[in-house]
Image 1: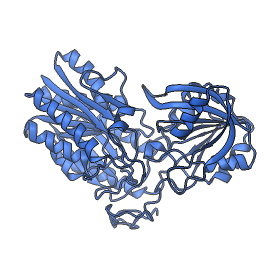
Image 2: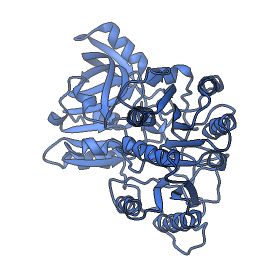
Image 3: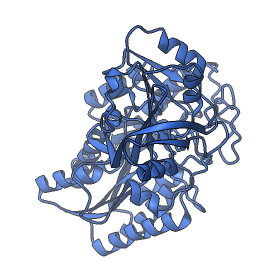
Image 4: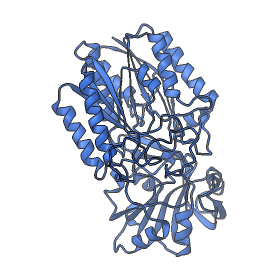
Length: 491
């Protein structure tokens, strides 16, 4: 067997002011054929898992380019078309192939392309023809369009949020692909549109039990090859934005349709109950200070670079400064210019510095402080499960008993190693302030005495009922109370 694999992925917040060009991919991951490291990134696990599977099978894996950019705003037309055509040219050169296995995200939007994944998948299908297997692993925070479904045999999405299972799901993808190529299965995909958009953390109920349930169905029912929930991505203003359920069966389309509908209606009945309750910055700090022992983790959930924001909000920092709280560490505030200034000053320097809140309204105001540059790290990285997440050149500065990590590559706060790599002992701090919606939970929950979810400022369009969408459907929940007419109302 000859199998072609490649990766092209990012998550686009169409409301974000930060555009992505080719340099955005190169800063996060750009690996020409054969140069991808052994450790996968979030969306490149199909490539690294494929190396092992194909080696075991004695198959030939033809690697194309792997490119990933940290979430932001629109991808430039030149960047998307250039990377797309690079991969398609590699596929053409690899022909004939028996399968194409891709790593995608599913929420990319590029200038001139509302559905880049649908575009590249359709072009792949045109190249290989109707009978060659085409499949992909995707992030659940994405859009599932009719165009991409029509071009693909099946999809597998991460189940967990935080996405701790991206390697496991790549294993599932390849298991189904191998069965198909060896003639042991005929995967058929069923899709149900839940007519809603919500946030579904699997670290809490009711989503925890739902994911456990679908995994049990996969395990116990031989007809069911895979079940995925496409959460949707509310910051992507595209026509087919929303939550969907995907069931892949072994040539049992009717059974898959029925199961997808049943599971989708179960999610729909619980809409509005999944997301962790959030409090504002004043209440968050009050609750943190009420704890006798630290570290208390305050998650600045909506200034999350993993959702495409800048990650430079200072709303929580300004409140901590106002209350004169000490023994607090912030990880991170994105400000490449401030990092450059600190790099020029050198470790140990005490300098006046303005940083943060440069990207957009609703992120607070820049902080002016006299800071000590404690530590500088080039090309800093933190752990994220089985991979590493870069946050670029970084500076650890201290002022008034407050520690702040300034970074040059936007990245959400995945893991306490974010602090330790910069010389900060996270467990010695009274309060840790991080920027992430829920990906932080798996690792930070191991050291936190309490976790507080805070909604500070308005860097992210987090209320679809009032978000000024221009392209997304306005006929789904919560824009409409009960679009499926079931009588269930959790608005």
